[in-house]
Length: 173
Image 1 (cartoon, one colour):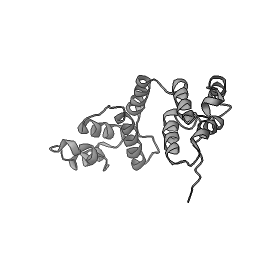
Image 2: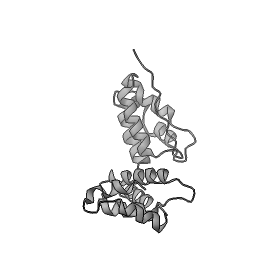
Image 3: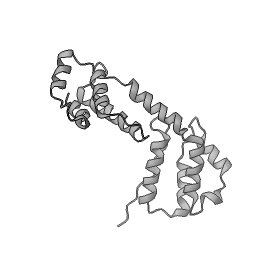
Image 4: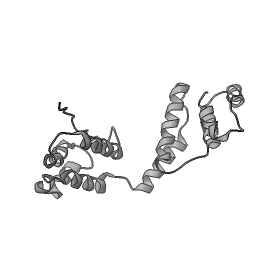
């Protein structure tokens, strides 16, 4: 039984190019669409009104014959990497700054704060930036904007002797 899965949509206002590329590579793995059509389908699915003008650039600079090859999608992805992908160092810095500047918002629940903090940390971790568990735990607590009493309650529940588990323990705010 065949399942038709639509390719992902690229919209720079809603998702990063890096996420779009991951979705595109996942789609490539599961699609039943002939390889000779994949590059053309994705090129046609690119937005016409994107400020990067990526669709226009694709059709101006890549021949239709190249897009129609078995390697058409790979050619297209390589082209988009050059025009849309962030420089790795700049991307790493942006993700680090996003993590480093994050604090719990005034109406944000503790659960949402912890989940968002953790997600932002996982992004820098993917860039091979790892913080020791105790530093991570203290950053989480400091930015949670909880009272001194609440902070002391969390600290008493943490086992400082077992440093690798401090971050996981601090998530029990």
